[in-house]
Image: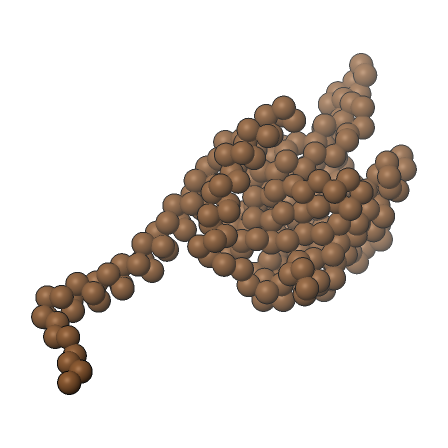
Length: 244
């Protein structure tokens, strides 16, 4: 006769405790990984080009483990979480800069809409020979389509402009990009060519959000022009973090 193995109440309680502990422990590990990633990103936000590989090497195993634990939603489900304004804590994406102009790495944002477009925003400081240091904030408009097969976004940059100075303190970043979108006089034109390959307009690429929640977003992006995959660590915001 087949007999069912009997368990004591103590054994059953132990099994239930183990089953309850497992997801709790994984959730705790996810939060710890996120905090480690954010700490490294914040501490190295202003990395020079030479320092980027070391920071990337420190982030990669943490990001890979976090993605393994959390899994990934499909690209359409992700879009609802990605919509809004994000502050770039760290990335190893470095574009050539004009002589005398330097992008402030602590002023970089990405604002994503659910209407097929997004804006990258960043403030550059410009050295005027014999004159003061000036600042202007650049806006780079991109469009995207969903690639369900690759579970990511096909992107292309289509327009660029700037405003003088830093973004105002307390301004709403989403409202700001809609002002740029609807008011033809909001952005000034750059006084030099912005077309690819020397500029960003016309450049295409692919972006994958490998992790996203209500506060943190981690993405990998590849420009088709050079095939290099960059890593991005971003934090959800509503207003500019640095305004001077």
